[in-house]
Image (cartoon, rainbow, N blue to C red; front, top):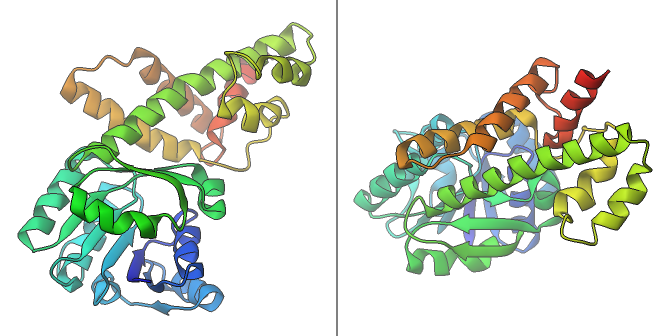
Length: 291
């Protein structure tokens, strides 16, 4: 069992930290809103810290899952940041979906401070975090990865090192590109089936067994048909991710016309009041335009 810290107790971080505690690790937590940290401790045990530096003191592994590049820098760098409290050789594992650029920046800062850094964004959403079945995509050095992988297993069903620093974030971008086009395609398919007068659930049952089948179809098809979007991964979070990967594509020359178009569609969903709807709400845009 390890002595660890977890920074950020949102809808993903809180259950991930909970799994660490349930597995017997000694967990110290930090959250920008201190009341959340105290509530987490009341439910799971461990200790709450007033600053990232205090949380990181003495921990062999420090995990973080915060909002964006700026949030990440704020909990890592500076006088009260985690790096200032970590001991030589400790590993920082970042589960934030952020840019590859910030991953490389913080990896270099960690190296200069005698620390190690793994960028490790996750896929699986809130349900995956709560059920401990996330997919974790990692970038960094093999020795550091080997140390943290058994601990990450507390909340992951798959965890893999994809290359040097930044590779985890780049892989998460690939994941989001694939999802964006898939959800739009599924939205159009369900919309078409409804307009054609078909039994949508029967159609989904049949085609899910063939080449059209996907996780999204199995887990979101029925709720998309019913216009239920009160769970899963929020549109505003997806737009953040799409913004990161579209910026990266401009740097590396990748052409992502469908992804860019879907990002515009999500902007329309936000304008409809769907900022916190699940990403499967792309179908709501089609239904509204058809009425």
